[in-house]
Length: 380
Ligand code: SF4
Image (cartoon, rainbow, N blue to C red; front, side, top):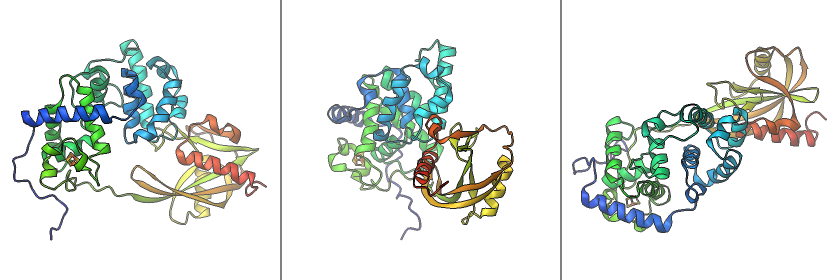
């Protein structure tokens, strides 16, 4: 039995571009399939560089069904680059709230400002200029310009890496730059000169709907006739990646600190998880989350002396590579003055929480706080 999960090396030489016959089959079959199977998406029905850009940023690490309502709400509030550039960051984050990976929203906002200051408010059409905008890499620049401006540019992201690796039987480690180079070369060789944006979308859609990681539906795949992995029965071995995603379990505690009916909120700093969003004072703890340690941490970060009590409420959630167990505590006997720090920290009326963009768990805590108060489990 093999000692690792590395796929058996294919006997054919490494393919770095599709030959003319495969290239033509891929283009034709994928475009025909896309024409009859593409899903409706708001950025497809009404295309512009701005709309496609926003959709591409939202779609990073996030599924289409999740993105659609956020996209519609965001576009209603920020219909163009100017309105986005003029907004303050907190408002932008409010409209991103719940979508996660908030850095994307901040970079989108910065890029909108750059487009207004450097390009007169017009989204640039040159690949290099787009690539120079905050939050945009090679994939995103290619996707925006091919989809919204029909420029013949290749794309390569999670779905298309899997599709090309299987179609061409690429056995190399996708974490390695040599393999990435081969995959970009394959992607470049299949770009359709007439409908580059549609072909790129077809490849991505194939990866998300048909050529899925664990259950590829090869029987109904429009390109199984030219697929190396299908022919060699290695669909589940490819693509090969040496990187194993391991979630690290961590324990955190949020503390509800109340004074004169208002609660303490702090804005997360640059470099922190959820930078720019607001949160209750939150600390990483060991598994027990000892009272005395938490009280000392509250004092060290705010200057306030508190006695804390467990509310009994907790939640588990995943953020990037962390599996977090979050416990919720309430501070009693709050004494002392709030120390002035460089942090943005405020006492906020709970009925005004809606005005403060929060992470998903921050909002969960705010909602739980409401029900705990209503049931008189807190502050009877
Ligand atoms: S035949 Fe199967 S493995 Fe090949 S591209 Fe289609 S779904 Fe993916």
